[in-house]
Image 1 (cartoon, rainbow, N blue to C red):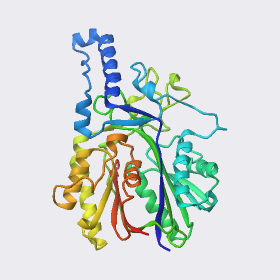
Image 2 (image 1 turned 90 degrees about the vertical axis):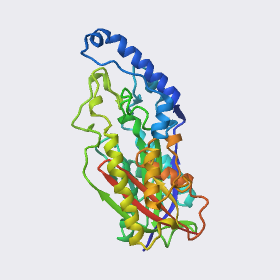
Image 3 (image 1 turned 30 degrees about the vertical axis):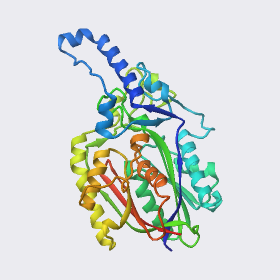
Image 4 (image 1 turned 45 degrees about the horizontal axis):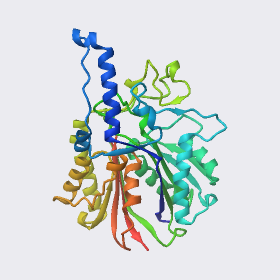
Length: 381
């Protein structure tokens, strides 16, 4: 049995924060902090905080706005974090709920009933709890059959999930597998960090991977794949079950409280990431093109991880050896910001409708780990 992509789904929060709104809130926090710490700043024991700038954010990252689940508290200089109330165990968790929303769209597009699905994989950067698995909860919400499990390979979780689903299908464990990527990235972001407060947004995506003998007429053949990991501390998130929230955080997901746990949130050495990840990803893509007898120029489109515009431009240039019209590597981070594993899937979901039968493309992710995943696809109709 060959595995194919039958459909994708996308769930987007209602609220969005523009760079201008984000900067206004951040700069109000800067004024407040500098005022409260004026004596220490004057004495030289603390450094004065500096303003953020909307134009700089766009120039540095390509990001103009981001969708968020909890807007008001992020912009409140007294909070500067998402406020997502905890739910009773009897109610669906927020991560499972948004995953199911994206999954339903993928199922509807493919004309598939939930009970036809034999496995669910929740593949994302941050899982809401240790157990029971979010994927098993999604299975219960949707009413799918078979089994379910969670996996985490940071920003590469979706491509690793697709390849895992392909393996399950090839091994006969299931004929239809839902890979869902619920990414509440704002909950691991330190909005008080000028260098990073603009990076992430929230979203959920879904990919329906199936055996080709049951797939709808219009689908995507998976013609090749490659997964790579290489350990690095240059992108790190230390928040986990060994950390415990301060009492003020009780009842909140991503809560920080007065004492806070901001030292356990997302941090990165951006310069090193850029310098090391770009050649790693470009080399992987070109090597796999050769292994699959593909001329890189035959790729109609590369749906790359949405982290930074300059990274995507340089990867595309290294693969194709020239200045590239970015229609070949479409960008959604201007609207969505970095949504971790969901970014390349959003790009694929929104910018694949013009493909004709026989045309090829590449879904590619890269991020913390380091990790990188490449899924080569060909349109079948």
